[in-house]
Length: 321
Image 1 (cartoon, rainbow, N blue to C red):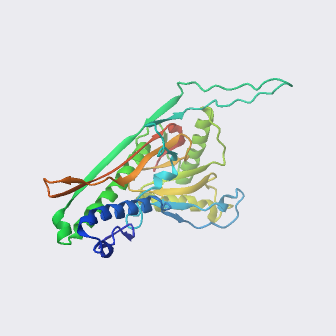
Image 2: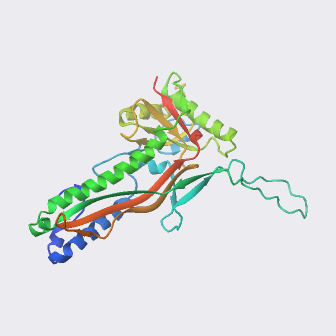
């Protein structure tokens, strides 16, 4: 039988040992088990090399890692590095708020015996992220089980899972690609452009009242076509820094490569912060419903999530020329 992400979804030899009237339930149980296994896997992250040489900034102490889409062994989950997860799986609320805390707690010099002065967050300074539910389904016909046509179930199940992860990746990457007003002009080289992008992100966030520092760890998101170009720019920082006038002076520890982004630009971003990813319900299959119109059963798969970029100043869209 076919494999998905390096594993078989179903073990049909075991299914054949189950009485015919119990096989559909076993199939759904096996698929749900497979879904949980894929969702619990570490993200497909490939460590790069530690670059050697004179390193006054100690930047080579951090490896640059590539996070890439791999439809053979894992789905595209690189966006998870960019969005902090808000676990809503046990929540009774269908939304959560992202507070725009630019002032936050203010520290005052306290006189002896004086009570601490409490800061107040304005109630209007927030964005609400509401749950979005995504649902699909397929039929398993009685004759498929009767005549052992399990390959058809294999194909439908694999297609369902691929499309779920593909849809989710498309939505989260589109939040980044849809940002406007964050353009970073090309400055004679990718190295200088990346440096400018990092500096502008830190400056813009500081001016907006956020607490950031120059040791923040940035990520670069690019189309696979631009991977060699981006890695060349990052590597140039460490090959021979003393004689290399241009080098990246900020911490770039993750490069996310995905076909979901255009190859006409790349994006430099500061992960986390106001980038939030709410997870209400992981993908799962519901109890099958009998459908006499097709002489089979309908199997519904569903899940719920949503996300937000609460502060677009955490990203810069970098030009190539």
